[in-house]
Image 1 (cartoon, rainbow, N blue to C red):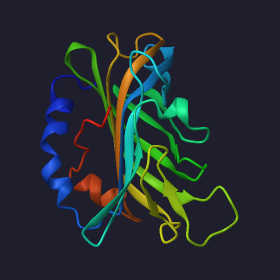
Image 2 (image 1 turned 135 degrees about the vertical axis):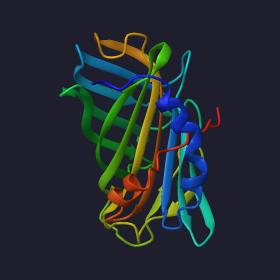
Image 3 (image 1 turned 90 degrees about the horizontal axis):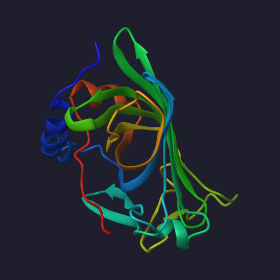
Amino acid sequence: MVRTGICAIVALGAAGTAVAGTSDLVASFGFTDLNGSFIGSNNDGTFTATAAGAGAASTGGDVTRLAGGLSETAEFDADFADDADEADVVINISVEDVAGDLVGSGTFEISDADGDTISGEIEGEWILGPFGFVFFNGTITDASFSSDGDDQEGLTFDGPSGGSFAFGDLLASLDGAFSLLFNSGDAFTTSFEGVSVQGDGLLVPAPGAAAMAAAGLVIATRRRRG
């Protein structure tokens, strides 16, 4: 059956300590106020979240490299979608009712200020919470950083609002965990658009997704800079 209740909200708050202690983490990302939409009906269709420009809500967030106890952050301040030609966030996940469970698979891609990307495949479960909240808890596989150009030396992931980090040693496959949280009112009963979405991810060297799932690691939500 489709799972409902407060499990999604509790999981979001409870996972932070466990995730923070995972020594293999190499990168994390998180964005608030993504522009969410759903095309379909009756728990069958496609969910999309993309970077939103100026308006009632505009997307902000960051991508952070974690190494040797240090962190370097590429910043995506609110309104970056209006100010940068290349920077973007695109998430596409299917919605499918399989024997009463809502499952989804798809992809994500985050582009930096000059078109370099981090992208990967997503698979997981949609959880319908109270008061119209929807939570997606899943794993990331086959993720990697990629350069927009041909030069594979000195590669940097550059935030449109400042900050950068080198990713030349992260071109191999990465795994991880991924979550989404939003409120659509009627969940996936009918198509909708213009919903504010929060998305977060953690990345570890592959193969790591199965281990993270077995340990019960989901993403703790975090408020980004506005």
